[in-house]
Length: 182
Image (cartoon, rainbow, N blue to C red; front, side):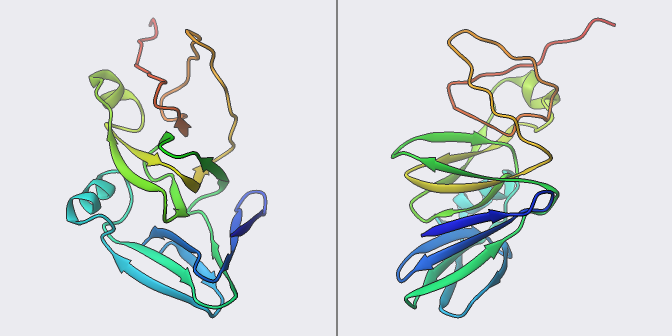
């Protein structure tokens, strides 16, 4: 599998699949594709997994695209102006992403609902209680509205962020809401 991201404000993710390669996305997530790709739509993991995805901002049904020719091309585009982030997840590596950030991933990646346990962060954190949990191995592509800036925090380091501006984080990162005087 090879991919290229083009554009600046409204990016497009073009993926070239080889025979037998598969990628999945929410139902209706594909923008265009060439011949040689078979589509299969189902709840991917069962009804409960599908309902969890609905709560996390995705659709109940997921579509898997599998290449059935030597090569084929499929393109995905984000729903809003922003950035497409390709992330290579190692086996059992977990990433927590904002609601509705998932664009597509290799079929080896598992997508689930992630429930935020802190009441203040859930009520006032900009994203609510439900986030997306992505587990590797494989490549996952996120669509993040607006610009993206990556920060790597050291042990015990803190970063104050306005609610709703967290695109994705390692599961070891925790956050809560603090009040501002006045």
